[in-house]
Length: 120
Image (cartoon, rainbow, N blue to C red; front, side):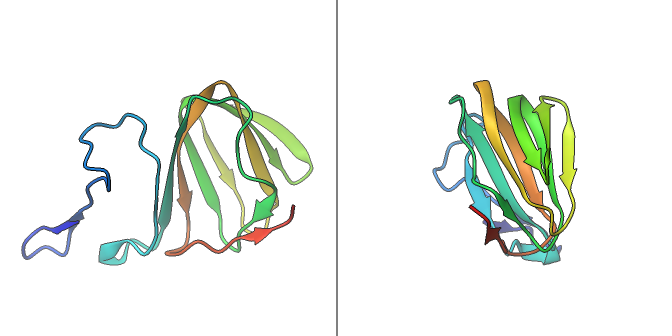
């Protein structure tokens, strides 16, 4: 991480030193500069993977960049596809399973740290 002199802004580099956006999978909590969010960068070519049922005391936003995933949100299922954004409200049980060819997305947690209640 590099602070931009006299601005309070920061540049965060990939932990593995890679300089492109391919295969970028990392979790970021307590970001500098008072961002107030935490991030999950998810990228996989596998089908059928994802977290078990859980919820957070804050909203989670999924920005789907590639592929698809079947999301369970409360008692409903929806297929999220590349180019879509899914917002799951606070305290709402959810999970997903990646579709054929995998999935790449940015998950934005509306909280500076991850707080998760696992339901399965």
